[in-house]
Length: 209
Image (cartoon, rainbow, N blue to C red; front, side, top):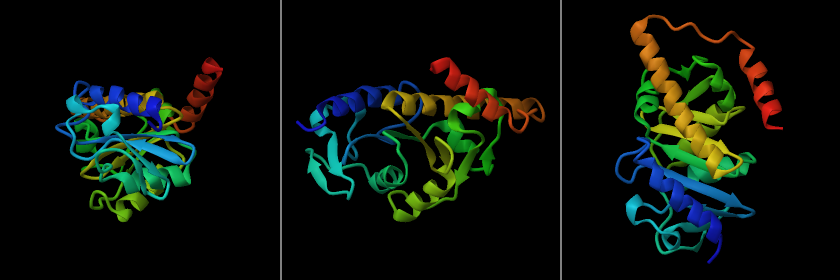
């Protein structure tokens, strides 16, 4: 079976989406790139019933290479990211706080220093119909220089050097969105000073080296 390890990893992390409150039903999708192939969750399969054989393998041109089901309807968005970046994994969710926030702001500001993990304030991509090239283009514009993006009236997308990293960034993004929401209930949030995210990014890199 092609990309056996990657497909097993997708099944593992897909099983955390609902318990972590990042999706409802079969919403959301995950993918991992290995060379010129991409393993991606299939469309409309309950995560509790997902197994590696149901995870699709496609080429960078979108052609199905292996898998029992059709790939996620958001395949164009995943492929656009892989064509334009060096990302090795993508997580797309419908996390409630982040999705709600994306309906009322144009950017999640620097509410906490850990936003540096996402490259800085997270932009909101303009709305476009799911599964379309228009949505893929919208996401790519907002993702520039970042590892996360909010999708207007839709959800979130995060990228990483591994599925573990991309998933962690999705959890972090939802936490930051919830934090910002709670802060606005108390008053006007005081944001991280301009330039601080770059300093924090450097310190995080140093800690990991």
